[in-house]
Amino acid sequence: MEDPQSQHKQQKKPNQLLRYAGLAFQMMAALGLGVFAGYKLDKLTGWKFPVFMIIFSLLALTLILWQIIKDTRRND
Image 1 (cartoon, rainbow, N blue to C red):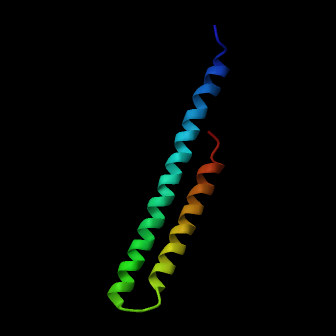
Image 2: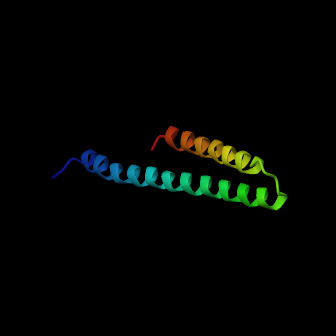
Image 3: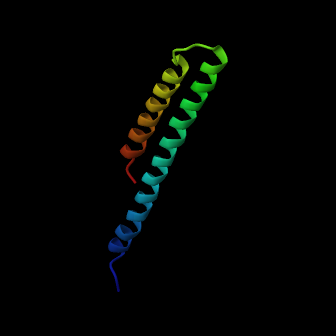
C-alpha cells in the first residue's frame, strides 16, 4: 500500500500546473482585451497619440499582477 501523503503530493502537482496555465491564459486575455478596447477608443476619438491604449494596457497589467500575487500567496 502506498502512503496517503505521497498520493496527495502526486495529485497536487497537476492541479498547480493547471492553475498556473489558467493564469497565463487570463494574462493574455486581459492584456489583449485592454489593448483592443484602448485601440478602439483611440480610433473613436481620432487622437493620434494612443492615450487609451496605454491607460487600458497598464490597467490590465496592474490587474494581472494583482491576480498573480493573490493566487500565488494562497496556501493550498
